[in-house]
Image (cartoon, rainbow, N blue to C red; front, top):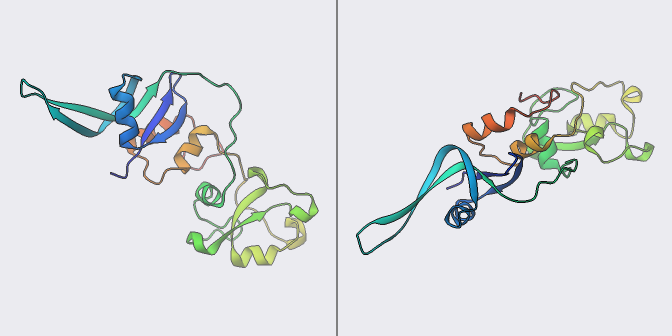
Length: 183
């Protein structure tokens, strides 16, 4: 089974994607305090003396007790997440590309003081990235088609899983930022 279970803390904040084995362990240990969504899978156990077979129904979203952290969340910047944020579209020419033909471009080049952060990085095709080179947008005579933004925690969980289920998406998208193109 490729689908993952979305683990939340007791406040409903996403904290991890789990496989079915990790989820079954939480359910069996009674560590799930509430759940949402459809039953993702059912795990069957052994048969007792009365001939009854045990089973665990694993939901697609589980919440567990634990510490709630209130610190700001900034996901690590990787090409995989960057390309997913920009939907594999070059933010200069607007054309979609396979990830193998994309690169990370720094809007303000690093040699000119630009940082390797979400708000300074965009997805670019090789042609546009070479055309822009080590220049600012003004120097290269180019424009961005969208404003780069930092994905919030909910957007990060969407971007980091290739198989988000409909009920998980419904839960996550309620907290997408206004900048998000998936809202």
